[in-house]
Image (cartoon, rainbow, N blue to C red):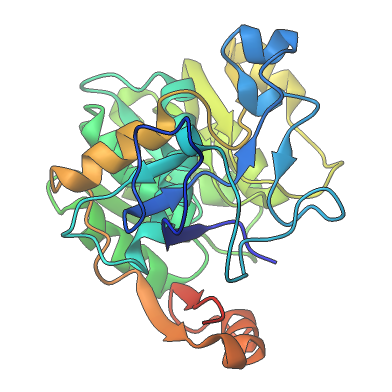
Length: 295
């Protein structure tokens, strides 16, 4: 179990020059073959031989006392970041990758569906890329309220999506409450939820020629408004994990205080209480639960 992880370097190989025992690091939990066409083209996240944490029997999860990983997939974090907060660099890197794929530019208006950890980070990274307005959409009002405050009142906006409304009803709500109507819709939509209704609504919320990025993984098969996509000439992109530079930028955003991690960790559980942590997460308590590795 586990792929969002941080740790303290215990030992290094003889050829490692960038790390020392005792360094506090965030761990990129998958490493590629470095030889295939995907790796050589710089898209190592698509490597068919990727060894990703919690994918037994090939790689065990990071919920363990020791976890072996190549040195260049460990990222030193500043002293101002607590060890438990450093696990959040992983979902932040996912968000960086999504916003890069969306090619968010200064002055654009963005909509992010899903106000969980990845969605919140997508919203704040879009702000850092220059978006003048970022609308966070979720079915849970408390999450929407948190998202607006997290992004900042000057840029952040929020809309509560109604499960009982048809897609068109939610589209109207988002365009009106999100202040997107005069813009002809959103320039960019990122779905971080994977929910079918969010996917459908997102395409309709886009302006003509807008960009849609699917960052949340939902059902393998779902209905998609293909005619709407074609008629608007929407640029639609899939998004998978993170690639070259995403972790580095995530760490830099935190180091410079542009992304604040404090407050995301709702509770830290000792290893012996791991099952209670999973139950708390299942009940929807807080934002993120962290389990300490065995000592």
